Image (tube, rainbow, N blue to C red; front, top):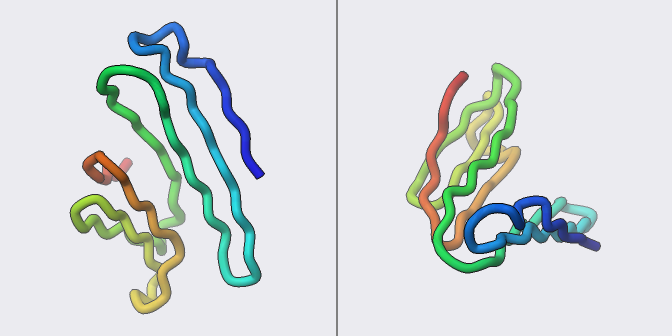
Length: 87
């Protein structure tokens, strides 16, 4: 299941945001894709509970609980750089 919106068409390159969801008994996968021409900075913000820790490794951010062997969330970037800003 998925969808798209063109709310960023006013920006250079006329980017379109696409999002797809896949739910299985073991996980929920959310895939975001931005199409258009040129290069753009894309920022995604997740507000985390204090007991969750983001770990950056190249183009992947893994959010762990207080037990690091149990990942809560994995974010993989294709063609981008991952970073974390604590606020």
